[in-house]
Amino acid sequence: MVLKLKEFRNLVRREFGPGMAHATPANVREFLDSRQAELFTREMRERIILNETATSYEEILKDFFARVLDMPQEEAIIMLWTLACDLSFASIELQHAERLGPLFKDIQE
Picture 1 (cartoon, helix red, strand yellow):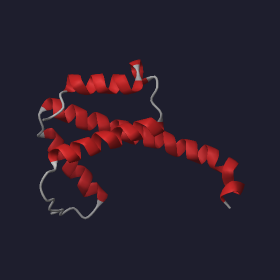
Picture 2 (cartoon, one colour):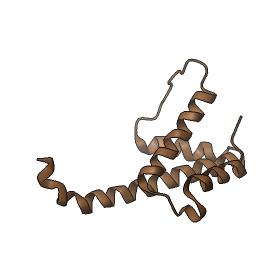
Picture 3 (cartoon, one colour):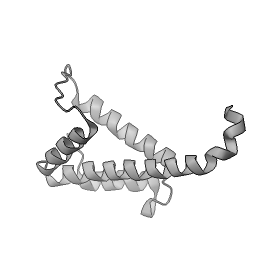
Picture 4 (cartoon, one colour):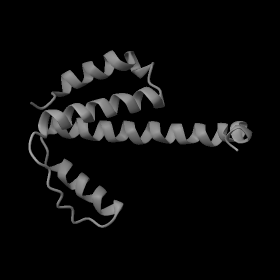
């Protein structure tokens, strides 16, 4: 069963509040990981055969975006939203780490 866009919106709003007011890099990561785990356990009941021909991250991205174009619209929106959210909050997390890293330099050594 594929998650419908309306259900996904409700799930996101329950998790992060209106306007994603309660979203942080940590809880966004947890949310996306749990959605991925749920999808994996729900849809992957058979043996997985890896037949990846891509040899670079660039090729993997090209394949992903090409496949999204052929998906049903609601499914594509959810896929693109989750990717954008993941990349955006990962970027925020990286910025925080770069800014706060020097404060904890002595602790790490």
